[in-house]
Image (cartoon, rainbow, N blue to C red; front, top):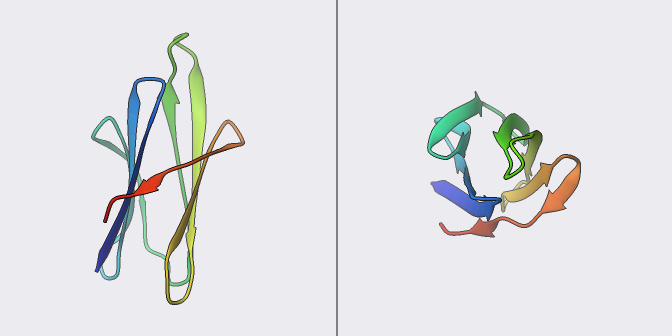
Length: 85
């Protein structure tokens, strides 16, 4: 089973994927920035370049037992990501 969350932030497309057997992925503008394997809880990190040409850090927390939840933070501020699958 695969779950996917997406959001757009300052002209950057962020996509987070969680799969049961192949791990978790963080993409920014279709470029893979982090990949990991976690059983109950996972953290992914990356970065993007904002409209002012400044680097902003991305942190993603995935976790849950029966339902996977996704929390996305950019420069330590929570950003909503929409579950699309």
